[in-house]
Length: 403
Image (tube, rainbow, N blue to C red; front, top):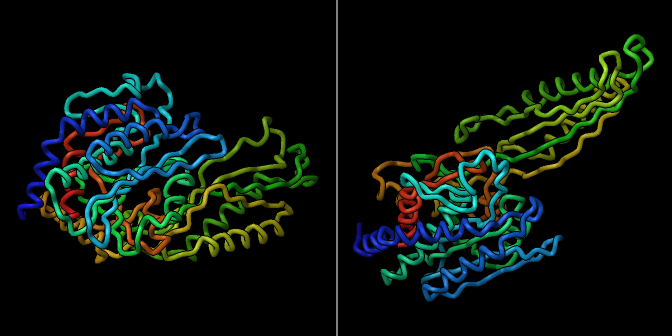
């Protein structure tokens, strides 16, 4: 490790206590979307803006007003004089705490215990937000001249679609095509998996409308339940047969088309239901287009409808088209893998996941992005926590990558 990298890494380690205190201070300020009953991220952004400004760095703030008139705040800070920038993209909003009875303590009054910090948003995405801020500070303290500018992006609204976060920021000409995008919002406990691909997501509500009658005279009606069973069977058969490619990046290396929720239909056993509503969760490999899959589903609905007399309606209530995967030899993938290997003496692997990070939005703009951090799989659950060591060690990787 050269001297500049060693000095920056040591500067991160020396900031551990400040990182812990800053994360606690951040978690004490709720940052929940108004769609989930909160007030947004503005108050939390105030605290973080003050923290970064204290390092002598100018912070650019992008506030967008949502439909509830809440201010949704995003922060940008950079250091260095290079041509391209390494961006660490974290989000500062959190999900709601859920049932408070399931928590051992107030989710917004963080508790430090046994090398962990407990509280809502500690791991998702607090440890990365604070880690990126103190990686920035380490480069400043080390008076480093990084190969890449170091950029901290603290985004709003990730938990509810990013309409007032990354999607808006991508229209502000902040990020360049030659920049490196690191999204520390996916991780494994050993920190040895780098996500470079995500499946597309398609959630469907399928409604079958028949004719309700007494069960003793089914010939007078159209059984929507039976029609739905036939349609779901046909969809399952056709989709798995037609869209059957395998991609070894993914642990589930094929596209998944799962029937999930099923609404109650009738209250009595002796009634033939005239309406049936079922739901599907589809996770689609980047090899396929969602429009093609929808066409296949609608063709099946037309066929089964003609056979049964039922009418079908297929509605989309969540859609994220798969983005082109980031290449494993892209700059961000190579720099990240090298930093991990240098600091941890292990070779990380490249993987794909079922969807869910803002890396997708960069890939949609043909900007390679990698998602990585070290964390337990405990986001969104009661008694969420982050390991202090994970936060500090990941911040070392962030700083190392820039040098």
